[in-house]
Length: 46
Image (tube, rainbow, N blue to C red; front, side, top):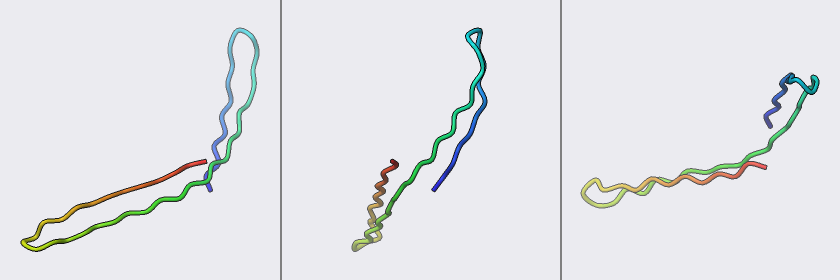
């Protein structure tokens, strides 16, 4: 879980924004004959 907070201001006024995100990810490495390999990554953040 990651939380981010920021203060903002403009000619229309001032404010604050807070948000929290959750994520999951995975990696995969396949090594074949002769040293050939393939890497893969996947991820999702809500």
